[in-house]
Image (tube, rainbow, N blue to C red; front, side, top):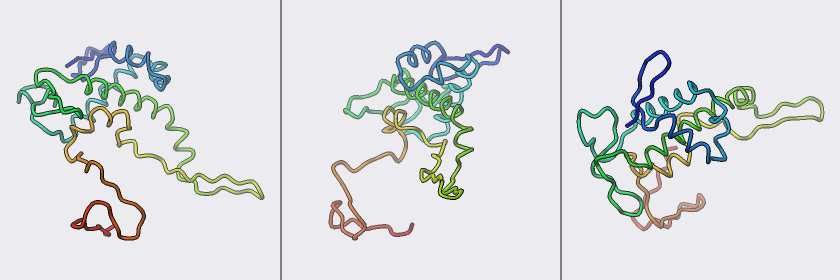
Length: 184
């Protein structure tokens, strides 16, 4: 666990401190907006990332009921099957918090662009037209780099290995007892 202290003296318990985040972001091609942000903006993003993680349902149990954050936890394993130590915050969680903070700052930098282009399907003047077919992504969803690190520990994040489904013809490779849910 780390603590971030703002100039006002207010402290927040977080998964990654500013120094660790800055070192991590230095080596990231995608962290340009994060590196350009002020210390206060980067610290706020780290606090926000921690808050978002604290609002999630995690498998396992807190190591101690009195600990400030959801991690460390007992009963966790990595994708390769090795156990996660229950006496410290796993590096994957620290890295995921930094990745989320990077995406928060990056999202704030792109917010005006997204709002200006929000859900325009077609804009036409004579023969010139603009059409946006990419919907705005939900900012509450964790980006792939975050899920790659900690998605396995989120409640309900199980996957059926080796399964696949194709098309809409009502057939499946999941097995004979698989039922399609057509309740869109």
